[in-house]
Amino acid sequence: MKIAFQGVPGAYSELASRALFGAGAKALPFDTFENVFEAVDKARGGKGLADRGVIPIENSLAGSIHQNYDLLLEHHLHIVGETYLRVEHALLALPSARFQDIREVRSHPQALAQCSRFFAEHRNIKPVVWFDTAGAARSIAEEKPDDVAALASEYAGKLYGLKALRRGTQNEAGNFTRFLAIARNPSPPPRGSKHPCKTSIAFSAKNEAGSLYRILGVFASRKIDLHKIESRPDPASPFEYCFYIDFAGGTGEANVKQALAELRGLTRDLRVLGSYPRALLPKSKRNSNSRTSRKP
Amino acid sequence: MKIAFQGVPGAYSELASRALFGAGAKALPFDTFENVFEAVDKARGGKGLADRGVIPIENSLAGSIHQNYDLLLEHHLHIVGETYLRVEHALLALPSARFQDIREVRSHPQALAQCSRFFAEHRNIKPVVWFDTAGAARSIAEEKPDDVAALASEYAGKLYGLKALRRGTQNEAGNFTRFLAIARNPSPPPRGSKHPCKTSIAFSAKNEAGSLYRILGVFASRKIDLHKIESRPDPASPFEYCFYIDFAGGTGEANVKQALAELRGLTRDLRVLGSYPRALLPKSKRNSNSRTSRKP
Image 1 (cartoon, helix red, strand yellow):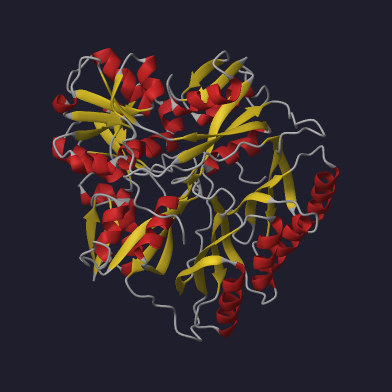
Image 2: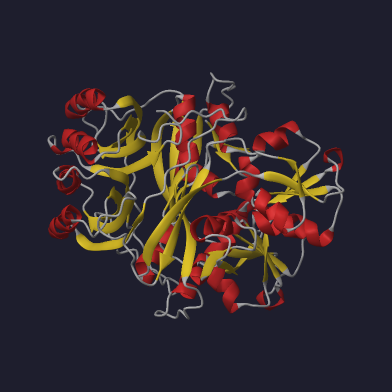
């Protein structure tokens, strides 16, 4: 099985691919999310180079990646799985490097920002931006500097023969990313499957209190739990909104079928993005760097 | 009036500050969002260096910036305004530079990715990552290379004496960011104000169909329109969710007061983040680069 992901080998997306499909699947790196969709798709310019794709869809600090929702809608691919990955950056350097010699640390700006307290505590270490976390690790392996390190996953470090001088350097221990597996064909878990199932849908509606209230009534009256709801304004039509909803259950179940049929009458352009086994959010472990409470 | 923003002079956040407070207000640059909150806050380690802060809260492609919601909750500051800014990157170079000589383009990885089609069409131009868009523009002004350009706003170009070799280089014309103005004290528009008002709230609740349905009933029964709804899982308590809702009306209005009182009984930790004049989403103009339809 070939799995397309965005980034270079060692990227967090490759880790997610291993979590979803095992270490035996062949993970193929692509430059952009668009290329990942094109690699899986066979229509719309796609070549079907890969059997599945793995894309990040939301991060606990940075929010939903709307761009990937757009690509899901554009490509008519199907969500067939999900996984949550904790974002844990390690400070990676050559096996011969010593922490006290490190003067420069390379990583993606978001990763550098996530480790801002590390840099505040080590003023003599200069953060340097890189295209991606795993690419920063690879550059250390290629250039072999003794005084430069990278911030990336420990997995990237192993891949490039680097050692972790520090682990868990991010400010916030509770930072995780949700990844989706996408495929050309839907594969809803079979009816009666023991594993809890989740379904993702997208639709357009007015973001009035009344219209959304009626839409949620479709789920409430059938005691279908929601896992996510998000509205997104459409600049092309200011009074219409796109909604993303994830709910419990699969399209094979009778009450889900009825709910979707009723939703068609209340929404526009309803799309079932996929039914798939539900992954559990990893339980948060707070580290000493964590300061932010997420409670309102 | 002093306005804190994240980034270097010429950043999109500074543009948002000018849109909100005029060119006369003094915009003060800070390294991180946390520093912006601390600059406005006088409690929690803050020094009250600025009267207001301006922060991005959501982008049409990249989604909500949850980190800034966290900081809003942590710092007990108040939203006092909002504005939408279209993200339009220009290719900025020295006045003496010619497009055909450009070999390298510097910018933030997100801006480079937003202009991926430009790079696909100009294979001889190498994208180079930089900490931020305006910082990339500043580096051109400082180093004065004839064959290097930056992707940033035209405003940043003017600030650093650069000319725009190309305008609107991003793939997607409908890309905009919503910015919030924050202050130490709430300033809800006066009752009877002609300008439409918006209120932002955050609360915790179970993300069951039934509980959210009852919560939206509070708005539906009073015909209060919603402008945004978003759920966010809390890794620390897997069955509780944080919700963000923006709705029409201000806290000075009787039906809003009643709705908030009723909400307190249905939610936990309800926080009113602020009431403020509502900004309109800029109408989308599609450019020839746009391929993605946002319709489900």
